[in-house]
Amino acid sequence: MSCNYAEGLSPYENKGILGVPEKFDSNDKLNQKCVLLAQLVKDSKHIVVHTGAGISTSAGIPDFRGPNGVWTLEKEGKKPTINVSFADAQPTKTHMILKKLVEIKKLKYIVSQNIDGLHLKSGVPRKFLAELHGNMFIDECNICKRQFVRSSPVETVGKKCSGVPCAAHHVTGRPCRGRLYDGVLDWEHSLPENDLLMAEWHSSIADLSICLGTTLQIVPSGNLPLETIKYGGKLVICNLQPTKHDNKADLLINYYVDDVLEKVMDILGIEIPSYNESENPMKFAETAIIDWSIDRKDVLALEKTFKSKCKGVKKKRILIKTKRFTSNANDIEKSKMIKLEVKEENETKDWPLKPSDQEFIIDQKGSIVS
Image (spheres, rainbow, N blue to C red):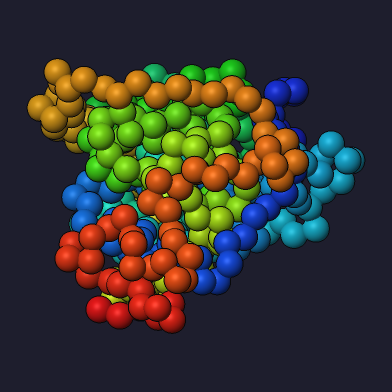
């Protein structure tokens, strides 16, 4: 189904850097980095997660720029061998972990570039989710801009009219003469205003931004995590391929996001919920009108918080390099990519995090001790 979505987009040549080789941390280094990430999560008060196609590959939905991504293979005249339909795909372990972190008020917001609807299926409330590039399971009115959940994925992409009348009167009691359009952006479309505002403000307020499964190549989505750094917060990037912001990250993890977050949840002692079909709003969309619009009250409340915390604060200057990635390992590898550098086994006592300030410490054998 990712292939069908990609084919429905307008022709566009500049799809970013494709097919860069994937990297994997060693088991020892991965375990150490997960302890660091768990400590950052534990200590942070306003966490924002930025998600890309890489968090949905374990659900059978191909990514776009990976070695076996839709656009990578497209250049070779091929298609992915695994391509689960959007209708059949279920939220991954990562989706369910993020939902749990939202429920326990540890994760304040999710900024997603994905159109697959898996955050919606997982049961994450709209209040905690920005869908910057749209959603295959959402219709939007061309006049009042209200959004409604569909029971099946749209058959078109690029904000095309379905001819169905707006259902706003079922929600507001006031009629609307608009018509519903698919909610998936094409290359030339502007990002949805309220989603972008919420994403920008949350990213600025955040003391920790975590990027999962995205190469951060598409702007402005890919530059939003930098707002966290500009206001003094920390940045963690977890991805198999290099990203254009790796050298700005406080912690860089090269491994599968499901495995990373599972380790972090185990360290924190938080149970990972299973996917529950009864919490999927799409199951009720056939018989009920389900409003998926961002509440204007939430936008105004966040704006007030943003101004109180960030107005008048001098932002750090960050140089955004435009150098293209290459497949040459020497060009990709940076010795100083990770500011919270994980030491080798015989140097574990020299952690950047002071032992007195952290709950989780790795002993000389690499084991986690409290």
